[in-house]
Amino acid sequence: MRLSKLFTKTLREAPKDEESINAKLLIRGGFIFKNSAGVYTFFSLGWRVIEKILKIVDEEMDAVGGEKISMPALVEKKYWDATGRWDVDIGFEVRGKKEKESNFTLGWSHEDILSFMASKFINSYKDLPKAVYQFQTKFRNEPRAKSGLLRGREFLMKDLYSFHESEKDLFRYYDSVKQAYFKIFERCGLKTIYTLAGGGAFTISNTHEFQVLSDVGEDTVFICLKCEYAENSEISKLKDGGQCSKCGGFVQEKKSIEVGNIFPLGLKYSEAFGLKYLDKDGGQKHVVMGSYGIGISRLMGTIVEIHNDGIGILWPENVAPFKVHLIALNHRNQEAGKIYEDLQNAGVEVLYDDRLDQSPGEKFADADLIGCPFRVIVSEKTLEKDSVEFKKRAEDKSILVNLNKLSNQLR
RNA sequence: CGGGCUGUAGUAUAACGGUAGUACGAGACGUUUGGGACGUUUUAGUCCCGGUUCGAAUCCGGGCAGCCCGACCA
Image (tube, rainbow, N blue to C red):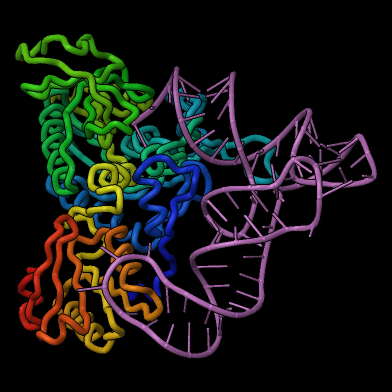
């Protein structure tokens, strides 16, 4: 991508209303645009990050046998009636212009509609277990959207649902998803804390959350500094400065961002929808379900909260919009353009700052803001030595790299 | 949904109740390229509706929107 062609431009100043770092940096960099509180457009830089995350999630979902599907965003009332969740105070109701009453809601969760469909395809123990997932925009009428991508009214979510013969099989699978989640977050550059939590509007049993410790987080967890056992404050009996119930270690209260959660739903939805199967002996049993969510857009915001230096973002390589930010100085666009082509041909994702009217300082500042992992500068100075300047975003020092060796350097 | 604060060019900010100004951005021309360049010039704004007033960005009422605290929540 050539910066001169990009749909967006960077902003020198953040909009005055924004306080959270992720909102400031992502808006300034042209990754996202706030259309309304908690409602965002993802421009190409931002969407590229989302796509990187989606790819990681796809791979890990595939590893636990998740089948990718796509359910509707518009969910008709009849699908909510069985569980009584039409009346839950979370969603946006949707009414046709000519209709008096709303008959649809924008999906804020998909357990209900999926359970209904599962009953059409799951008949016998031979059909179990099954797991399907989707990436969907969820709509929740947040009374207070805030903190950039951390709490939206419209947000991208990965939701996985699993169906089992027994609790035992559910928990076997639950554990494999737990491991998959740890991998996903790690690949996104985040350390997560596995946290015991309540079930909210989804289930009465305990659930588990993946929390990233951060002061902008809205959750409060009590975490043992020794064994990292953690509980969400909403259900916790632990207290700040107390002793860990598992290992006796020191417990601390921390703010955190919930980036994922896993719910052993049990029989709630299968009972409501009559989702049953025939076991080996011909007996009818209810299917046991689990659901597993990751807030994709929130995850992106969280990555920025964790990986920034105030000046700009430091994208972990796995989720960076581009690997290399190439800058042409002294109007050496001819030479830089050649390097741009070469790198692209070598399969390297490059954001090329080919702008002619911007000063060097402005180009450097934009590179720092956008935060690609590697910066390559082509200038009079470097070309005298048949080389380019090579610098990691996370480091201060730069080195000269010979033109022939640049692709090696990036391997 | 309760409490508080705030709405002025694309962005950030000024203007006693009296000519809406400045900087950045954007356009044109020229000069310029190693940490947010320079000159000339152009462009573009008072959230909406009502009220008070000779006169409202400014005061009042009502909406709407945004932010912060709380409640709620992925």
